[in-house]
Length: 271
Image 1 (cartoon, rainbow, N blue to C red):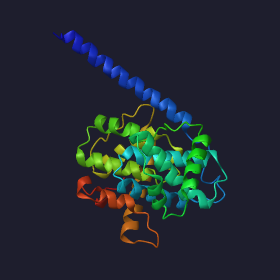
Image 2 (image 1 turned 180 degrees about the horizontal axis):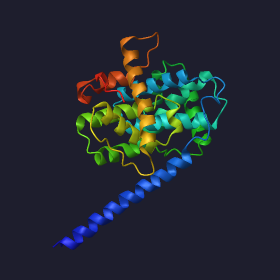
Image 3 (image 1 turned 120 degrees about the vertical axis):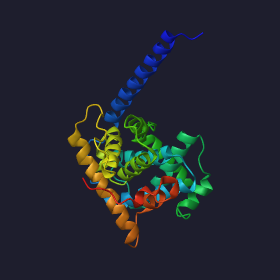
Image 4 (image 1 turned 60 degrees about the vertical axis):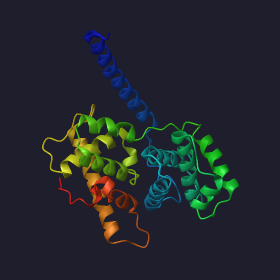
């Protein structure tokens, strides 16, 4: 028979394990953080180029009904390659993106689309051999270190800690994914992006006393990044309503669906 003392010990042990796990993730994210602006260091890559690649990956992940982990890891793998290999040519951009997607699928799902399907995603611009070669090159450039820390490692923990309801949780998810569009945001720790997304969601909904209990961070940090996420939120709405020749509004379309409570259509409170 389980005693109350045994239950108390198990609960205490679980709580301590969660704390240690969080601390370990924060150590890893610091080690993996780019030391400089990897986009500016590239000769042919612009911030808009990267934004288009991320937007494309949103649609690809949606087409294959991938869990959100695949989306986040695909972008982290792509960015890590850009950071470590400074002479990536424009002709390799989409090749790198599809390679990152395939590696992410294999790591997260234990499965990846066939080489024929991967080539079709790029409208058969790249041969099967080129796609395989990029995967091998990417693994070597990254020294096979492909288990990268991203905001989703923290977001669920923080939304639970903030006692978010379903609507504010979906809004937090949307803001967190929007942060992946911004190369500037990738210079911030993933845990800080996740915490800022929760904080910004609650501020946008007019919730009094929003959650600020993120360890090692002050309210000013959450406010600054939260406002950056608000700008991204407004930019997505503008892209959707006033589309350019090549709009980057895939996340807006994704989160405008009823399954996400249409949070991208929200008229947010400014802060």
